Image (cartoon, rainbow, N blue to C red; front, side, top):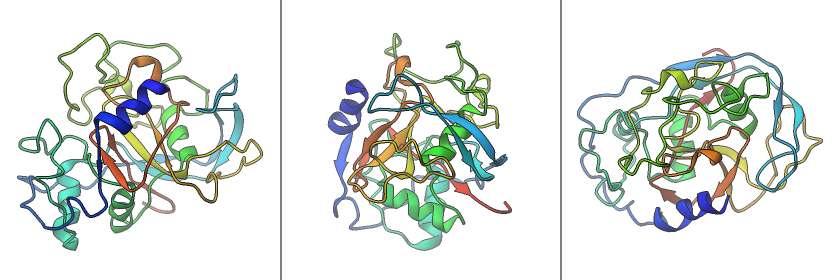
Length: 261
């Protein structure tokens, strides 16, 4: 886990307490984003976590999650720009620009936003960030698999950098259909890591029905790993944490909804 945390807290983090929030630069999007495609995840039990228990995950347990919808892909640059345009939310696109820039990247995952900004987008879109349990069920299904596509690593199923220094930025959403989860979600591991709703803290193994994590904390759960991480961290039960007031080039988010879509 140390490698992943270093990526998220050193080379990629910019403090967002006021910085980058003082003006509205022109949106980088050249077209309106399509509304997120939502995938249905039926209610029921699934295997969450992993044994042996470590701070990063576990223990393995059966958890019930009520039915919900989750976006098939990470929210894109153009979709977040639509939110800014519709609400008047002010973000300095120049100061938030990742190393690979915004131009021509409308279909890339939106990054360099805080947890609060991701949650605000989700509220505007009629939903919320997924809980860690919702995220993990959407990623691994009900058969306790290690990856969205199965138990064994497979080629051309995720965007990650290990052994390939030409991978310098996130891929467009949906580029790896072979990596779909049992519920049709794409890029659940690799590409960019994803915020979850929960506070990060020790796992309570007795919270087995619609778990929402600790009631308080200082860090939020992040799942999935990014293209910067080695493949041994791109496992659905892996978890790390991130300051909700900061933003990173390696972290994006998805939209979740309960009830009718």
